[in-house]
Length: 409
Image 1 (cartoon, rainbow, N blue to C red):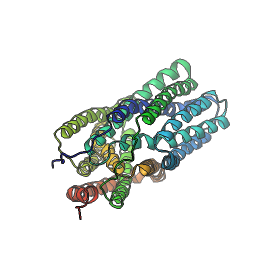
Image 2: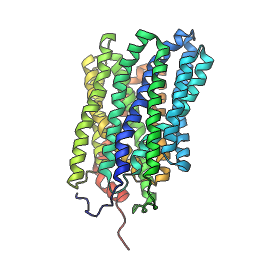
Image 3: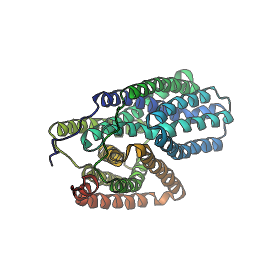
Image 4: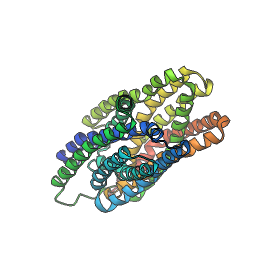
């Protein structure tokens, strides 16, 4: 379908700042977090913390990160997304520094609490900033920015574990947190620069109201958040069974497959989206999400057929990597893009509550009922496939009803 020619101008300065500085800030912040996450167990063992306390600390970190994103959304309602973004990255620096300087579990608890606060403030704001300047009808550009951020996330995950291993081997686990603090501090400086530039290039007049129905857009956002639950459960189960099927020597190779394919797939998708935008063609995001859901369900099949096969694990992780490019960024861009700006970060927080809470619940159930894990994977895969097919059949109609302006009276 061709997009109408009469499209409002974008603020080129602000869009350029977002696409330049925001991926750099996100990459540094996520690189620091995942590097520290990988070294946390070793650091706590070196401090003499008991295994039970280590599990409590790591579980507490996950739960706090999941819930505190709501705080970031609420702060953004009053102050906009750039304030919690910059403040959250800066607070994270303090958290890393406290953990690096800790000499026992009490100080680690404090550092983890400060870090969780910083994560909660900044995590949903990244994507709200990306969406705020690319509202209706610039769906292709908005989705392109989300695909770019998704690729940066995976590039950070891909390189952080290697960096953590090198730093730990040469200087010890505590040095990982000092390194993370330095990387996050650089990200905080860039975030502050983004905030200043954001203020200087702000609109001098009130933005034009969206022609879309706010109520319908919010219903669409609620539906996408609900769809995230079975999808994230599928990701969690596939990763769990894939890692179970791998040996110690093959695990490092297995962890490369998914992020590498996500990065390569993202580059391809960004090129397609750029061509579509230049040619004024529209590809409904809901249709892409539907295809990605079906592909994600198919990714579970090799593990269901050969649970302990290493090749099944590689095939599943690779297929899932391609599916993630189609589901994650497209769903998030559609989820938050046309919501009123004031509430974009809060809506994005809902997505992260689901995507963070579901893995905790699924992992708990898998530990409680390990023999039922493969049956759980089969049930979730079937549910995701059925949802994907249903969404594929209704994507165009839903897109018209949710995201097209009503006809003039």
